[in-house]
Amino acid sequence: RKEVEQDPGPFNVPEGATVAFNCTYSNSASQSFFWYRQDCRKEPKLLMSVYSSGNEDGRFTAQLNRASQYISLLIRDSKLSDSATYLCVVNRFNDMRFGAGTRLTVKP
Amino acid sequence: DAMVIQNPRYQVTQFGKPVTLSCSQTLNHNVMYWYQQKSSQAPKLLFHYYDKDFNNEADTPDNFQSRRPNTSFCFLDIRSPGLGDTAMYLCATSSGVAGELFFGEGSRLTVL
Image (tube, rainbow over the protein chains, first blue to last red):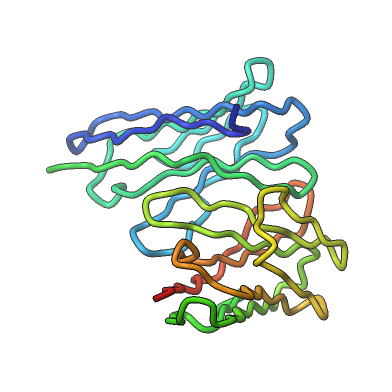
């Protein structure tokens, strides 16, 4: 079983749609969690950290469920510019592991 | 200003010809990482350093070696590149524990 598993996608949605991504992790000792965004042929960039209480940044909401060992990312009111690959990252003692990534395409 | 700098950005090498990729950081972060990312795949952790402590992933081929001579610099050496080593190599840093990853722009390696 992979340490970090992520919805494979791809997700193709119209502008304005709400889309959710999930990611599960296998090690209950994992300490911190992140969502990264990666555009084609570019390096990943931090979208947001994921906190235990859940956190929101504009149209983006991240949640963590430690009991079920998953994290989620919700994007509301999708924009064309949200088209990218979204990667979850799980950290345990500086061992930072990526999920496989979910490709999102937002269409007009 | 770029905080994690990778060189070269693009490298083409011949099968079996050694390659060294470099990474430097101005963040004074304790932790430095090397990831390999092949086309349409997620970044795969090769190894990381916490200060001088080296952590090698169990499935990282012996062909891949790393050096961290000081806090600011880290190198990835590929001793005998194979065709399957064609990928983008990403260097990242972190302050540790809950810190996020800061990436360089990557070194895109093509092995012919």
